[in-house]
Length: 328
Image (spheres, rainbow, N blue to C red):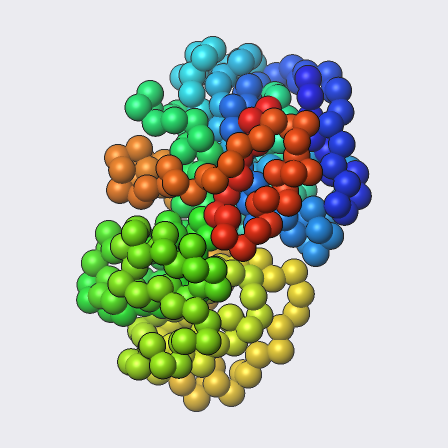
C-alpha cells in the first residue's frame, strides 16, 4: 500500500508499505478521505514536535476492508469514520470515562500513525458507522466538529447569551453552528481572513469581524468566549473582552508558552477552561452532520492524491482555506 510519511519537517515521502493485517479486536479500513488539519500543518512545519517518521492524519473516513477475530457489528464495505484516540481502557482516567486523558494516550497522526495512507488498522472500538446518506468526505470532518462540540459543552452557553468565537477554521465554523443550535444570542466571529468571515456569516454568525475591529464591534462584553486559533495574541484578546464572571474556553493548539496576565483572570473572576479532544462527542457530532444540523460540506476547498501531498499542504496553509482533502 501507499503511505504518506513525514520524515522531517517540510519533507513528505510516499512510501510503499505492507498492507496491515487485523489482529483480534481490530479492523482494517480502506481510507477514502483524510483532511489536512491545523495540527497536521503544525507538525509538518516542526512547530509541534513529534517522533518522526510518522504518517500524519487525524481526520479520516473510509470503508471496512478486513475484520479481525472477535469483532462484531461490522461488515466488509461498511462506511466508517475513525475516532483517532487510542486509550488503554484501564488507567484511573479511562475508568472514569475520561479516555482522552488516558495515561497511555496515543492520538493517530500525532503519537501513532494516522490516516494518510491507503489502509489503516484500528481497534474496532474507535469506528463509527456512517449513514449511507452521508459522504465519506463529510464524515472525515466529524473530528473537528467533535472538538467544537466538546468546547461548546464546556462553555455551557445558556439561551440568549452572547458568545465570541476566535477563528473561522473547521472548529470555529462548527462551533458557530452548534452555538446557534443551543440558542446562543449574538455570535460574533473574529477571523483574519475575509473569505472565512464570509463563510462564518453564511453558517449563522451574526457578525464576522477582523481582529483589529474587536474593540469597536464588541461593545458589550460577552458572557462566553471560545478561542480556537492557537494564536497567543488572540488568546490574550479573548481574556480582555470576556465579561466579568464570564467563561473562556481555550481550544487552540499553541505549541509554545504564552505570557498571559493572571491578575486579569483574578480581578474579572473568570472561569478559564481547557478543552482537550472530544470525549463522548464523536458519535453525536457524526449524527449532527448526517442530519444536516452542522454543515461541513463546503469546508473542503481542494482534493489531491497522496503523490501531490506537498502541493496539498501548501494550499492547506493558505489563510483562506478551511480544509484540503487527500484521497489515498
